[in-house]
Length: 334
Image 1 (spheres, rainbow, N blue to C red):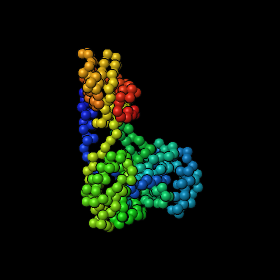
Image 2 (cartoon, rainbow, N blue to C red):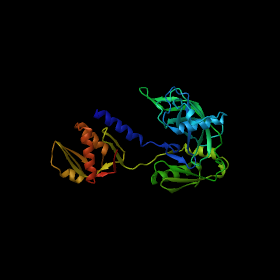
Image 3 (tube, rainbow, N blue to C red):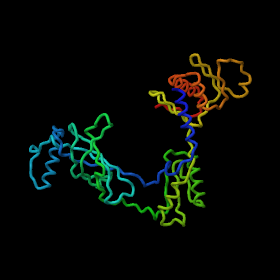
Image 4 (cartoon, one colour):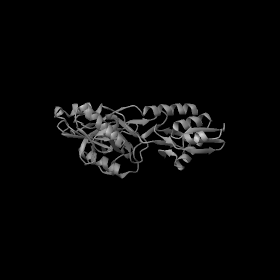
C-alpha cells in the first residue's frame, strides 16, 4: 500500500513542473459567473408538500389571485405545495433567450419534491435586478443509493430575460488575476505575454495581477486578443509545501520542499541528514540512513517507505522535522 502511495506522489510532483495555459491559472477581471436566487412554489406533490408553513399558503393564495381566482390562505391544500429557494449561475456574456440549469431546495417541512412542478418564478442577482425566469418539472437528485428528495434540479429550467452588458471588444486595457498569486509566476506571465505580442504590453501590478494594454493591431478585437493570450503557456511557480490529511493518511509534497541537516530518531528508526563535511566524519552505522543536506522530502518518504514506516508515523516525523526548523517549506494539516 505504501509503495502505491509513493508512486502516486511522484506522479503528482512531476506534473507540477509542466507549463499550463494562462486561461487555466488566471481569470480575466470582470468576466465571471454571477449568482442568481429566487423564491418559488413547487406544485403537484402527492401529499408530500409543506404542512405547517403559513408563508407557503399565503404565497400560493397570492399566485392564484393573479390568475383571477380569489381565495383565502385557509382554503389552500398545503400538502400538495412546497416553498423552495431557487439558485442558478448566470454565465458571463449571457444573452436574453439562453437557458439556464437551476436547483430548487425546499425551505419548509415538505418531505419530498418528487413529481412536482415549479411554477413561474423570477431570479434576481445581487443588485436585486431580475435576470431570468424559472419554471419546469423537478428532477430529484440522488447518488445512486439514496435520493435527496427535498432538493432537485431542472435542466434548462430558466430562461435569461436580459443581456449582460459588456463592452468587451473595445477595451483599451485588460486585467488578469492569478488564481494562486505569486511574484515569480506574475513575472513569467508578463515576459511570456510581451514575447508573444512583440512589445511591452503587459506589466505586473502585484504578485496576483497582470495588466495588458491593447496593441494597435488588436484595437476593437478584444476577443482575438484574449484568445491569443489565454492559450499562452506559462510555467507557474509554487511555494515549497507539504499538505497532510491526518484522517486519511494522505501526504502531498511539492517538488521544491527540502530538508536541512538534521538527525531523526523515531522508535527503532534512525535517520541523519548531513552536509558533505559532516558526512565524511561520521562513524559507520548500518542501522542509520544518511542523506545529504538539502535532500528532498520525496527522497525521505521513499526511504521511510522502504523501512515500512506507516503513514501515521511518517506524519509524526514530518511534524517533528518542521518543529526543528529543518523542513524548508510550509507544512499544512487538513
